[in-house]
Amino acid sequence: MKEWNIHKTIFEADQINPGLAVSPWSGHRQFAYDLIGFLQPQKIVELGTHYGCSLFSFLQACKDLDLNTGISAVDSWEGDKQAGFYGEEVIETVKRTVKEFFPDQNVTLIRKYFNEAAKEVSDNSIDILHIDGLHTYDAVSEDFRTWLPKLKENGIVLFHDIASKLKYGTNDFWEELKQKYSSYYTFEHSWGLGVLFPKGDRVFKMLEDNNMRDKMLIYEYYAENLLLNIQLLDHQKMVCERDQAMASMTEMINERDKTIASMTDMINERDQAERSMTEMINERDKTIASMTNMINERDKAEQVMTEMIDERDKAEQTMTEMINERDKTIASMTDMINERDKSIASMTNLIDDKDKAIESMTAMIDERDACISSMTDMIDERDRYIAELTADLEK
Image (cartoon, one colour):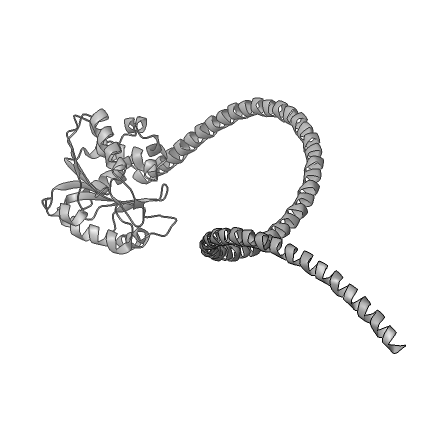
């Protein structure tokens, strides 16, 4: 009887991606490693690789046990609506891990959808088929129907997520398979792993002879213990990090306290300055209010003066027009004056002539006045003589 061995394994891929050690598939890595060592298969195909937790457990077994098993990992490496979509960083990490730790292994990364990849795989050629794609009932049932013909006689099909807490469709499909087939194993831990023998029970009987159901408890215990140890180490690391962070933060707090004390003094100084400035601002506000009133008065005065200026401008315009009219009148009168001056000059000559004539006539008048005066005296004498004669006659 072929003996089943439980190995103590170091999974090298964890050095590049430590998250593999706590991924949902990590609890089945040791069983998968020992299964490869027990069966020494010629060909393994897995549908759904993502970061490669299951793939690298297969490759680690082939590397450590010096097996030339052909392993094909089929994935679109773009994600899905259930697991989420992602970028090129995932497949680049897988490629880097293969290159660094498994360069001599017979591994092929096939970036295709499962239905497309199935066309390139011969029937009855796969020893172990691992189905871990989209976990809906329709998807997993289609993957099984499409790839079952590719499985060899007495081949094995592994189903992940058959005990999902999220109640994936794989849970229901696995229950159906258990009703249809009698040879299988169900691991309940790490989201569940179904091990199905749909094309013959030869390998199943070999595992039964090795008390596989008892060993399943060991793998479950080992997986849970390993996860707990990892979580414990993580927590211890977190505690140390927290202690260091707290010590650092304590120093920072002390520095902050000193800074706060200093800033408190500064704030008190600022408060005093603020009170002083508040008083100054109040005084300035009063001054501004007074000046605002003065400005309003000035604005009113300015408005009155503006109106006066407008009136003056109108008056100035009117007076300018009057001045222009006066200038025209003055120009006309200047012409008249010039004419008058000429006339006056002519008349002055006439007056001079007249003055000379008057002077001559004045002399003649004086002579006449003298003659008249003499004649008046003569008349007065005649009047007195006549009056005497008249008086004599009346007697």
